[in-house]
Length: 354
Image 1 (cartoon, rainbow, N blue to C red):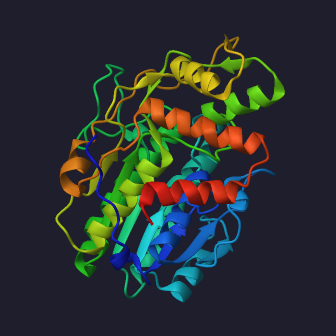
Image 2: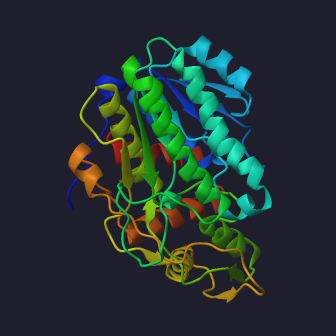
């Protein structure tokens, strides 16, 4: 296994970092990583979703100042940015699910496009800003369903409102970069990550939480698209890539304006992930096909991450089997009533070496 580069604590120590979406699954892991690197973190996000969520399970974070706010509140975002004056911004706040995007397409576009524009407009007047990294998705590409791994130069598109809103976000970010930030010397880029899994995700309509809920309830799991393939990736691998990218941007290194972060192995079908996860949990194997017509979701999806390898020295450290096993171990510990703050800190210490 080729080891990945790691963020430099000497760079991050004392840095003022704004993370949007810090109460979400990825955001909660990211702020803990930044804390280990010595950063001073401000979080902007909605209140954590659900009575059980990773943000609250992670416990207090002395290095984090948390502000519960909607990214669509342009005036509130402006006031917070003016007060914080961040040096680096990692923008994760989003409506991040495909199925809800069909139920609320206008709200999905409002958050994913206009929310990003509200943030960029606030940052335009922020002194001391060095870099903005906007996290989008592997679903920003126009997908002809050939199974060919997407590269960063491939055409953007999106069938469902979520994918289309994220592709539109990419276009908006490119426009603001070229029209405003470049002249100000602020580096701006987008990160396109694979389907992220790991401990602490409790969202509705995501496969790993659905598997765990079925396991806890002794219910039969229902799958909408069991043969759909995705580039499954452990959350810490993806976040490691974001941090390396943001660091490179702030240092004004010659890196691409968009990078894919996906697993080096072949994408796996949903049904295979289910079987592996159920086996690791000790759950009764099996699932049933959802009845009736289902909304469109991409059947084949794969990412080519060679540009991130070359530009950042980034590699995924966990293959799909290991990522699934580590994810299942987290949920098994949670089901036993384990101390998930301590469990997460141990995971981070092992992964980051800090």
